[in-house]
Amino acid sequence: MALMPVAEALQRVLADAKPLPGETVFLNETLGRVLTKDVTALRTQPPAAVSAMDGYAVRASDVATAPVTLKVIGEVAAGHPFAKQVARGQAVRIFTGGVMPTGSDTVVIQELATSAGDSVTIEKPTSKGRNVRAQGIDFARDQVLLHKGHRLTDRDLMLAAAMNHPSLSVHRRPKVAVLGTGDELVAPGSEPGPGEIVYSNGFALTALAHNEGAEVHDLGIARDSIADIVSAVRRARNWNADILLTSGGASVGEHDLVQRALAAEGLDLSFWRVALRPGRPMMHGRLGGMQVLGVPGNPVSSFVCAFLFLVPLIRRLAGRQDIERIPQAARLGRDLPANDERTDYLRATLVAGTDGPVATPLPDQDSSLMAPLAKADCLVIREPHAAAAAKGSDCVILKLGL
Image 1 (spheres, rainbow, N blue to C red):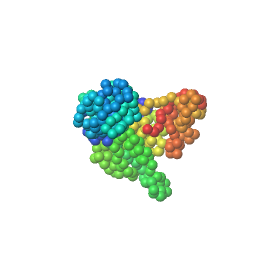
Image 2 (cartoon, one colour):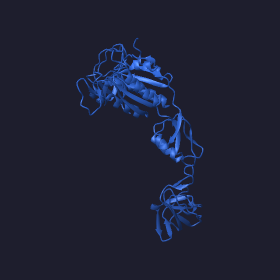
Image 3 (tube, helix red, strand yellow):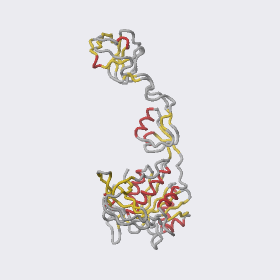
Image 4 (spheres, one colour):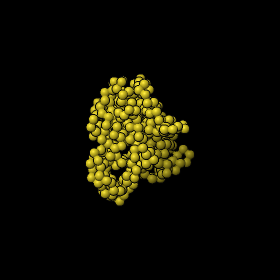
C-alpha cells in the first residue's frame, strides 16, 4: 500500500465524523463546549433602573442648580428597594446596584454631597440620568445573545447565568478510549527489567484529549497477544467510546498485532501508512460507530500523529468550527536540507524576532526523543520534496500547546 498524503488521510478521518448529539448539562459543565441551540434571555438586565454609584437618588430638577439642601427620606441598598416616592425637595441615600426609587431620575455621587442629620447639601449641579443604569441597558428578555454552534467561553457562562439559564444544551463530549500495547511496557514507578521501558505515550495522549474537552478512559496496557488486545477493544466498545486510540503495534510486523486484533473484531480499515515524519505507520478505520486511530509506539510519533489527527476528530465530534489548527508564518532559525517524499514535522523552539517569530528546529529529530519534544514550542512543516532552506527563509509552523 502506497503512503497516503497527510491531507488525504485527515480527510478520510473526518469524512463521516459528525457532531455528536446534544445534551442538557449544568452551566458550570459547559465551558469550551458547543451550543446546539440559540440561547434566549429569560429576563431583562437590569430589570429596573439602578444606581451606578454610591450617592443620593434625586429629582434632576432639584439639582439643576447648586448648592441646594434636600431632605433625606430613606435609604436604598442593592436588593432592598425603597417603597415610597421621592417628591420635590427630597433625596434617598442610595448604594451601587440599588433600584432607583419612584420619582427619582438622577444619582448625585457622595463626593458631591455633604450630609447633616436628615438633610444633604448638593454642592454641584448634576444632569438628568447621571449615574443611573437604565432598565435593559445590558439586554432585554427574549433577546438571543448566544447562538447555536458557538463554543462557550468563561465570559459566555457569566452571560448565560445572568440570562437566568442554570443549564444549556451542548454537544456531548467525545469519549476517547486510550490503549497502550506492548510486552515491553511497564507503568511509571516500576523498576523496568531487561528489555522493558516505562510507558509514557498514554499520559500525553490522555492529556491531549482532555485538553480538547474529551471524556477519556485509560484502558491501560495490552500485552502482545491478540486475546489481550481484543479484550481491551471490547472494553472500549462496551464503554461506548466514540474513538479508540491505540499506541504501538499499528504496523504489520510479526509482533504488531493491533491490526489483526481489530480485524478480528470487524475493523473496516481506511489506511495504515501515511506520508509523514514522524509517524508513517499511522492507522485509521471504523468498528461500527467507533472511530479507530492507531498511532505508532515511538513517543514523538504517537504525539505528533495524535496532534494532527486525533485533535481535529475530537473537535469535529464536539461540534467545533475550528477543526484544524491554523498554520502560521515564521522564519527559520537554522539551515535545513532538502526533504524526501514525506511531509516532515520538525520539533522547534519559537522566539520573537525583528521580522516576526523565528522557529529553530531542534538538532535531533529522532522519534524516540521526548526531552526535545517537551522543549519544543511548535512544529515546522516541511512539504514533500521541499528544497533545501536557508536560515532566515520563510517557513510554516503549527504551534504546540493550548
